[in-house]
Image 1 (spheres, rainbow, N blue to C red):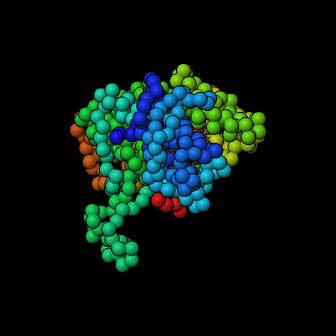
Image 2: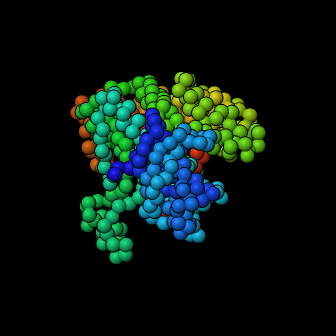
Image 3: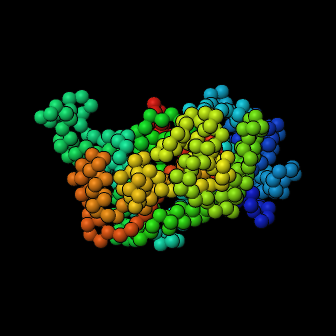
Length: 478
């Protein structure tokens, strides 16, 4: 007999005889009321046990997280809260869960930090079940959006010999022994004897490879894991995360900003339409959390309000130069409340500056553009002033930067000069430069860190809580 998902039982159009439901015990009250969840929905289904005709030994085994199979009849619920419940006719325990040693006792409201230490079990809680279902829907929405627009999905390499960001903070990939690696004449590790015959790393971005495909296929996107060896123990950074990176031939920066804004609004709406129960739960969770904060620190909008606000409002487009003027003259800057005081044009904006612009000054999502060339990557198109590049960042409330992108430098001579100025070996990028030698054209793209998007949509405050198994400095558990 095939079992029916909890979600389908709760949404049934009518009562049903002889159903089979399988799941995990959430709670068992009064030796009679069994709450079962199978992950298909945030809502449990109540199963009413005939305790007078059930052995005491069996009742004792109905502990939190025990896996069970329940036969019974789906009937209209006698209590408030849900339409249906299951009157149990047969009860089978598929897997016991020792109440004394099971680490996550739901009644005790375990902390998020404790749940991170038990990441293999935390998804059995309402919070993480909701987050992961929303993450799944957002992931599908990303593919749906680009496929509907005629983009080609490209799988760019995870192992690479190039550093797209020029930051050098990369994880090395090697098959050489940890000790006794072969050395060259200069006394350095001889990577010519390594597996790939050269120094290789885990990718920080699929952008450069995606660009080459955009210059043949017109519009492409990547969606895959990327890696940064930054020793950043913050609530916004991971060592392993997922990136969405579209690249579009013949798009200038304005078209790139239009694409990014339309894309973000599409995937948020997609999740809001399909994750109503999960987002309602997360909205209430955030509201309860906000009540614990001092009034001055509380968010002006609830989660659902904030998401709807992003859908209803155009993103404010502001040049870097204008943003610097606003920040220089702001009260936090004048009163030295910022950790990083803005003193002059050319400063690299920090999260506190980005959030001030979004949350305090404009009070809406902001797209900053035309950044100083010195603080941006080599592949961004140089403006006629020779001081700024056609870069853009999208800033969101509570998050700061959620998207970074640019019009790419399509002129071979300018790109070669920028590479030389940064001391990058041109031979390492011969293939990238070929796209400027053979049929170059204006093109643009951006990168969106998927976890930051999930962070915003779920209302969570720590990026480690929106990826199944976070990888951070000193932590590669599970």
